[in-house]
Amino acid sequence: MTAPIVELPKPENPSPKAENGAPELPPLRDAGIRMLLIPAFGIAIPYFVGYFGPYGPASALYWAGLAWAMLISFAIWHGNRFFLLRQRRYYDWFQHPVRKLCVLLFANVFYTAPVTVLMLLGWYRVAGFGPDWNAIRTATLCCIICVATITHVYETVYLIQQRESDLLAVQRLENARMEAELEAIKTQVAPHFLFNSLNTLGWLIEHHPRRAIEFNQDLAEVYRYILAAQRRALVPLEDELNFAMRYFSLLQLRFGDGLEMTVDETGMRALLRPALRADRPGGPSHWFLPPISVQVLIENAVKHNQHSREHPLRIGIEFGERDAEYYGEHYVVVRHARRPMPQIRPGARVGLKNLDTRCRLALGRGIEALDSDGEFAVRIPVRSVPA
Image (cartoon, rainbow, N blue to C red; front, side, top):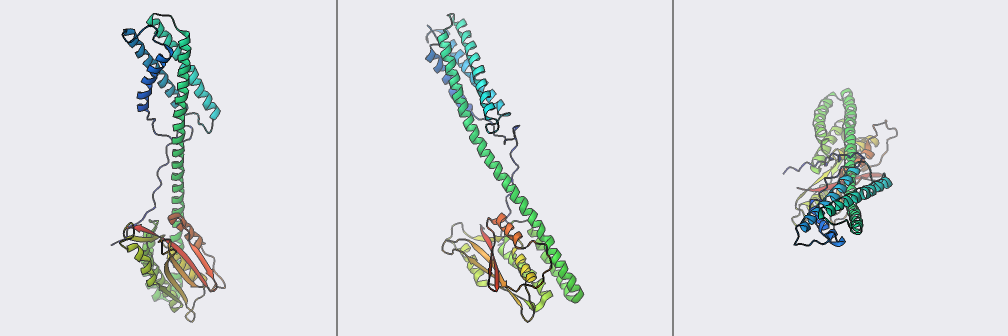
């Protein structure tokens, strides 16, 4: 069965911006609370302040007054709601807290109070008895307090939504940054590989024309893999190993018996066995790693170390698990003898730093370089992905 292709998630488009630069929040969905509280205030406040005067439920004016009280509650709620939503376009709690507070207080007092007083006076005129200024003052104060409380609730919910939106926007920007960095690094790999391959091909044309023809054919196959791999963030481990072996065959065309490479088949089976166990949660898995990662280490080993037919450079590829009991971190190791070249031509400086960055962006973990006496090894992390 062919292993699936794993792509990095594409960053979503950033949230649209409001006029103050903050992410635009979804529409305010408060229809339910308005349908509940507007009638509640329209009933409770008139009873609390003695709004109905001498009229009771048996009088038609009582019901007209109740309807008028509902209209007062509706006008106060929706008027303040309109001002609240409008001022959000221009003022932010974090950028202009004092100005925003003043605007809210101004809208509350200088809208709620006049509307309450005028509409109550209208009711008293229709009801036919003189205005009760004590009731008007109490009702106006109650409305101002209720509006301030509800505005506080609105703004608290708004700040919570704004924080969640900001966190989401930051995460989207971070994903976009990581994607851009990964793409920028991946674009360096193919030119770097082509540059070194053309140098090798030029050397073979000059010294071994027949080998140059074979090298050119193999190079076309290898470069086809590179072009395909650049569209992926991760590639199957098996594909990467096959590519590394093809690449090593190109090196052997040039250096002959000066290079040797071994693959730890036992370790390979041990690495894959836990992922294929039926009792492991999640079922069968495939192992993935960044593309062209093993090849980079082989290339560095050949480039920076001495090798000859008499003293071949032996490169080993091994597999392991940091914590076998708990199925912890898995990795691929490329190791070789440490024989520094006396003089090294300047290169493109992609190397280990590039590979480490690619692993961190694609897997969340970087490589580990192990430099001991006479040996140099690099661990590349791998990830298990359900089949």
